[in-house]
Image (cartoon, rainbow, N blue to C red):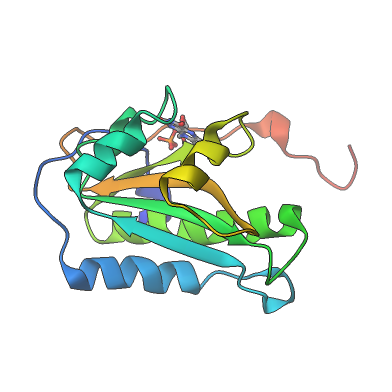
Length: 166
Ligand SMILES: Cc1cc2nc3c(=O)[nH]c(=O)nc-3n(C[C@H](O)[C@H](O)[C@H](O)COP(=O)(O)O)c2cc1C
């Protein structure tokens, strides 16, 4: 699967916007993810307003790439659909990886920007979007047209594979 093996984090983007079709395909990919008990506990806040994206980039010292991206996605867990946050995280992570793979497939690039559970970061996101109870912002994605050469890392490591026993 080419998009899987060619995916790498992209942190610099041109100012070309995404089309509605591209955004819909990214969301379709997200919704294709598996989830525990098929609870689908994810929520996605889509942001294209450059001022809002800049504001989001200040919420973590490592979130700068979202400023200048074409699309910011805030991935949230909805605890009303699965009250166990750990399961929500696993489901939302699967959806997030699907988005990154679909972005690669479309010739776009993106990067995962961690927020939860770093102290304060998720809480700040909650305030920015005035989120209701039981909606937990987990992390953000910056997506856009790459303005840097992709650099795919070779992460194969024999030592991390255990055959039949530890
Ligand atoms: C949970 C998680 C949090 C991450 N947080 C950040 C972040 O805050 N800022 C950033 O620039 N990259 C972040 N990344 C991207 C990683 O740095 C990147 O995936 C890693 O260096 C491997 O590189 P690759 O994605 O090109 O394979 C995060 C990735 C994950 C999975």
